Length: 257
Image (cartoon, rainbow, N blue to C red; front, side):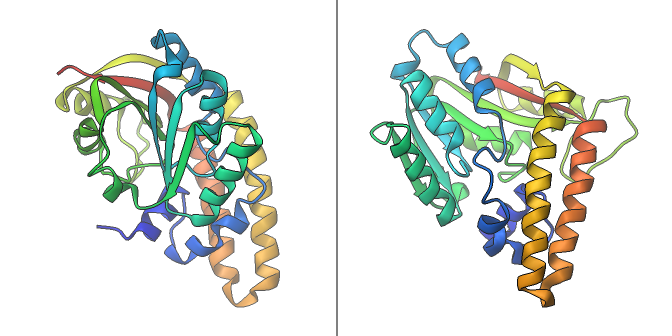
């Protein structure tokens, strides 16, 4: 099993676990790192009659954008977990700023370990964190224990269309994703494909800031130039893939019990 540092770097589309300690600097300009909080809030609002009564688990919460904005917009309780201490510090600051610190709980931890004891959640969110728990079958089987009987999982991810010849080590074909969801005993409640132009706008902002900070790190640590240049190149590759080769989506899943 990957170390927590390796898992986090992979989730951030990196290759070298040495990047882990530099991620707070590289991503300092961004609060929303992965999934779109507005889209997730809309899904919750559309599928629950009383969102303020919900108990939400945000795994790999980053800087807490999804949790803070959900608590602010919906009035729900959110428990966010991330492995980077600086991200959790920032999440707590934003919760205070948005006046939802009484509704948000953030903690540093390895989500693979934390989920072993977390129970009774109405919503579990996986906001663009990649295959931290394994493939869809493995992930849903593990997270099912965190849900109450009527709970749902919201995942922000991407798959490769079946007719495509493209392949990616961390992405599945659409038919494989759907089969694994069914094999895990889940059904799709709703699925929203992300518009290409929305992906491009978000990617441009993230990449430009990320590249700027990596170049600054090269000046500060010239002996690690290859590490940061490789990360820039990897981000360029993954941005191209997301915009041109795969289908990005947000999906709500529920156990068939």
